[in-house]
Length: 122
Image 1 (tube, one colour):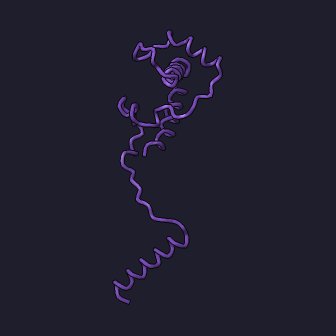
Image 2 (spheres, one colour; image 1 turned 60 degrees about the vertical axis):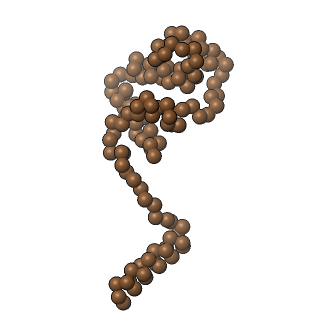
Image 3 (cartoon, rainbow, N blue to C red; image 1 turned 90 degrees about the horizontal axis):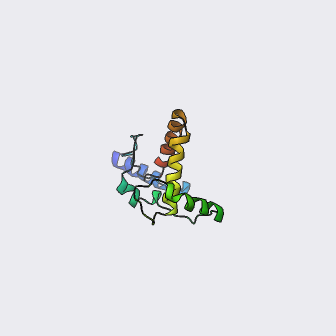
C-alpha cells in the first residue's frame, strides 16, 4: 500500500469511527485559562451575561422588605435609587465576605468562586 492509500484508508476509518460512535472531533482553545488570578474588569462585568441577573428572584416579601430597608445603609459605588436587587444582594454578600469570614475562609471562598466561575469563561 502506498502512503496516499494509507492516508485515505486512515481518513475513511476515522470518518467511520465518528459516524458509528457519535463522537466528533472538536477543536479546544485553552487560551487565557492558565491565569488563576483572573479578575474581570468593570466593562466585562457590565457586558458579560455571567454577571447579569437572568432568573426571576424567588424572594419572600419579608426578605425583599429587609433588603429595601437596608438599602440606605449599604455603601454602593453610586448613591442612586435605581440600584437593582442583584446589585444590592451582591453588595451584601461582598460585605459579609469581607467582614464575617476570616482570612483563611476568605481565601478558600475566593479560590472556590474563581474555580467555579472559570468554567463560565468560554
